[in-house]
Amino acid sequence: MDTDYIIITNNPFVASEYGEDHLVDYQEESFISLLQRVQRFVYEGHELLSHPLSGSVKPKETLYKSVLIAKKVAGLDLSSLKLIDSSIETCEKFHYKEETNEKNLEDMRFVDYTLISSAIASADV
Image (cartoon, rainbow, N blue to C red):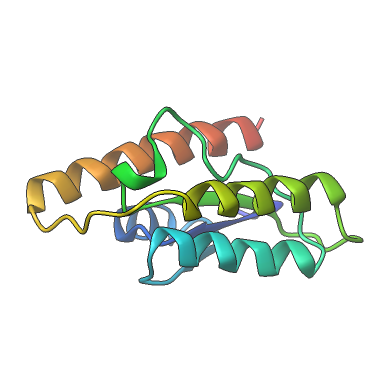
């Protein structure tokens, strides 16, 4: 499937589920590092297509995040820039607890997968 977006993720489940049919940029990294990577894409002219802090999951409650950005590079989108900058500021206020329980990690991966699946369905319409 040729899409107009890129899935930026640190979630291996999202990468495995969408990697064959979508353009996925997966890296094993922290939540905040993922947001900083998305920020670099925004500075390069990509537009945010999903909210970096979507869902009711607080940044300190999960280790995984997936964000949709436009594949097409345009000029610097100021609304995307403000949104990613404020999302990073919000995340920096939280203290993360490293979770090692595999069941909790699976749940975190699945919640992120569900959220990004919804954004992908909307983007594909």
